[in-house]
Image (cartoon, rainbow, N blue to C red; front, side, top):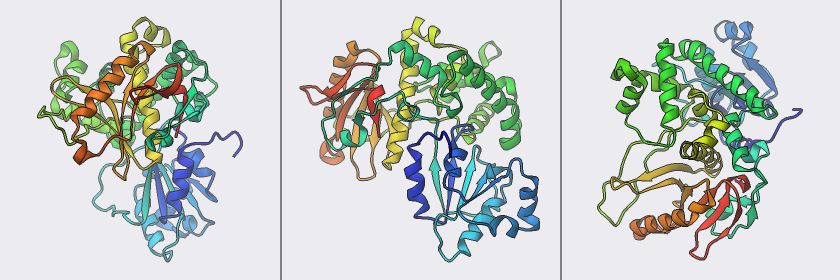
Length: 417
């Protein structure tokens, strides 16, 4: 495919196709699912636009399935019955692998007639591009190597803090790789308008668009924080009073079904102290640009309010860490206790290894962040939880290396999987 920029998900997809008969690629609209799947597909059906393909699901399934494989069904959720057709086709294929691909930007409402795809249909989550994928990280620092305890040396790629504010506002959308900030902000605002006015009513049911816009704005104000749902309801309601409980949960569910939300769940380690741990998730969008677009701010606005900019910078880093951790089979959580102690990100791998990460824009905050990581480790019952594979402070700029206290420091524009 001409002009295709390699994605971290390419290797994940290849692995899953060798393991199961079909792979479902989920992610928000315009994050690159179709381009990634099309590279390996021999046959492509656009279920959103191809009326003949949609009609064939019931009238003549052979029209769809008697084709060279792998067969890609793009935007499969337009016709949810296609799920069962693919599942049966995998069953009938005598345990073939990598036969079908499904891409979707929305999860349909629950359907009692849709059968489990366990063992037949694997799932791959895609997000907008990391800085490494978009060419804004030089990749000198390997996250894999850090988690293996290997010292990593490197430096940033020359992007300044103002440059990174522009990357936050522009986001990792493939369509915006060459766009300037003004173009990007217009594109993302149109994107959110389409989500609110068209996609949510089409795929997950009608919601009040004005209330949805206020919920998006509230989530934008609470990026990288852990507000209770009732706090979001009150903030989004404003002078009108809090949004009703069933309404706020319905709106959050709609945004989640469209894969726009990407919260960090609370990590629950074995601790030495008896401090109660907070269990509320930390709120993030799937891309930091959604948060800034929802509250109508640009890079200049962020530079005038560096405290707010710090939260949005954290959202940028968390997006990239999630992409890289997923490629390793891991996940990204957060840790907070009721005494106010917190760690921005905890990376956990399937083999039990874990790492703690603090995110700071300024080099002036590295000493404090490193001390916080060490203090946190002392609270963890490492006899039961295991020693951390790495303690890492991620900054906006500067060099990468290991401090005398054993804490790794690296700029986000040097990190790769």
